[in-house]
Length: 303
Image (cartoon, rainbow, N blue to C red; front, side):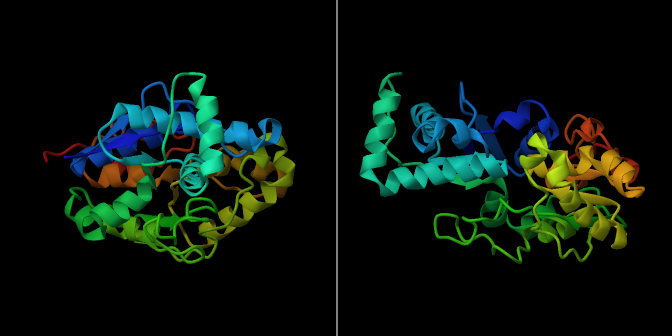
């Protein structure tokens, strides 16, 4: 069993608890374990730098990295969240490339008796599934194929930008035409419907401050998913999932539409297809818009 140091991020404790649950269940079924960084903290997400500035925001990720280093085990830190991965990977690579920044951050960390040398490798959970597992192994783990389920694979804008097509990102996919999510979907036995908006932005944290500035972006994504006949939209991004699911009622009121499309995490699809419990392992009961079709396909089977 490969043991990864795991940075789940703040959303794993609330709005994306079902991502955390289903991902850990999926990794375990594949023979990998995700071990939490003890006493981890927020990475600042997409808004931390606004009030705190670059150095202070970087110190948040540096502290998590220092804790991961202290904890020992694998040299790889895995995160499932686009923003967490973006910030943590960026800070890690910045420390590796700048002695000045490393010294500044270690001065800050020193106040808490900690330090970090840049020796870890920060990876996205999807990248691990692509490079360490692969589509064939995912398909081999399937016990309950999701035959007949039509899925719109929506990667979002941050998961692959800007690190997916870099050496330290393990070149796991391209920026503009990523295929990994469709590969995950087809490995489960579901159908990945054509989806041009797979890397489209939903507005991200702008929606938290003023949804009126981004609601049209979400509608565009839902329009295409509905036109493609998708039973569900699947995404790897916690904020993407929250936005597209939570604001459908508002979109319907504003535009006169009738959207009621379940928005699930890719790991929920994998967990159900692996024959794991659709609620205890996949967390399908934690979605606001429930997918009756996907839930009906679930049910635990022997390994």
